[in-house]
Image (cartoon, rainbow, N blue to C red; front, side):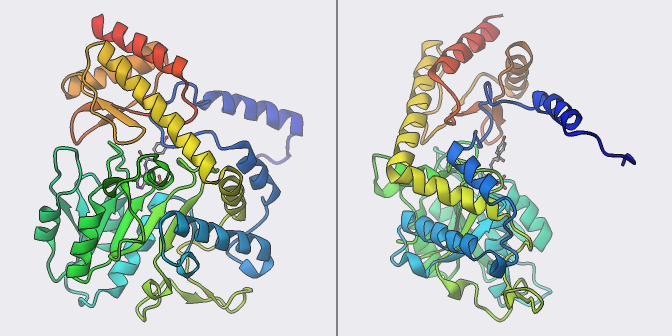
Length: 391
Ligand code: 0PR
């Protein structure tokens, strides 16, 4: 570090340079995050010093966190939203870690048994990290033709060393939702906890116009014990903002919980979150944007993103491609084998500046239609893709 500091003017001219190296999201269709809502940004600034790790000092922010948990629980059809437990996290990874931690801590298996977790083959890579951290085996289930977990495959993976089941509401590659009703029944039958990873879909599925049995999930299903959903994805909040929700305190209240520690010198007696110091600014941003948009605002946002997705779907058909029919605002399209797909992705990036991703479950290009994308962007993207395919 240099001896003497530099002026505000100098530092900001440096920051401008760094900022110019970052994306402004203009041509980004690979990200599950977007530009935060201005209301979230304003609230974030207002609570910049707030620390949820020492809640007694920030009673107002704590109250907002409580209300965010209650709003999220009510979105997820909790029969008594105020009974739900949970808190804000840094995102889906941390929320999934906490959910699986509690599953493992509650399992009676002795320390010599290798425990296992049953996950859909489409599970996000955070579960790979979790399995390595906790030394548990991931048992990946077979999928149906729409890349959703097959209930009979889930059931066939369960044994006495299974700590729990994972279902996904909006899987990372395709946006599809696992058959959560069937998973809930299996969880009850084997008396296992069921965690739903709705990191992406948590702010999408509850706002779909067409609500049916196949696209609904939540605490109305009796087998569901926890859910993760991320305000920093389709929730329009700032990074880092994730939510972990537990059905009630009993999911956390067990003698083997080693996360819950005494904090005698702080303003609270215990801390039961994975992290210590936590940003109250993310809580305020999330509270503000959820209250500001309300159901109506999120419904409009989801409708807008689905409109973009449908537009891209039709345009791709127009250039003779066969995109997979999208469940939500994630679209995949096959453009050839692995090498060809990687090549096209690279050309899109290097020749035209587009960021898209590739799926591995099947080989395809993947586009996430977030609120920052426009119809004009899509038209241009398809022209550029057509040019690459023809040259
Ligand atoms: N669960 C699901 C279903 C997810 O899709 C993701 C992230 C996570 C958990 C983990 O969430 P955090 O990254 O918040 O811990 N899915 C995206 C992905 O890995 C995250 C992402 C976001 C990637 C923005 C790129 C990007 O620009 O693809």
